[in-house]
Image (cartoon, rainbow, N blue to C red; front, side):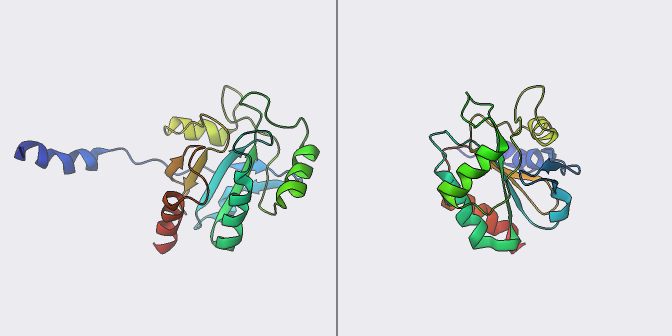
Length: 175
């Protein structure tokens, strides 16, 4: 049965939902040296993905590269190698870079090996956690809008080529 009282409360409750704050100026150490400054991509969506070379989801690198190729400079796809989920990453950046180049021909940006959980997590992931987003495993995807706000996050089981993820990206590009 339709309850008019609750129907009137729903729009009010949605209006009261807290908006996620825009990311402050984060940067990541680039695997090739230097920094990847997210502020440099202001106005463009950003997909931040914590990755690992020895994970059941590692084959998602192919799909991440395809996103990078398909969207070009309209979307930053950033791979963040991490060893936070059970020793699934190489011990050095050189090994990670070589693995990604040889096995996946990656040209998308890669960071240095980075902590994504716990007290030593990168500040981006500390901020994301404060906004309700915590990677539960490797290849967790965080989609930011052009202003640096978290739009959605996708678990490892949602691949980079999934219709849900692509629709979310396309919606940001259409605005």
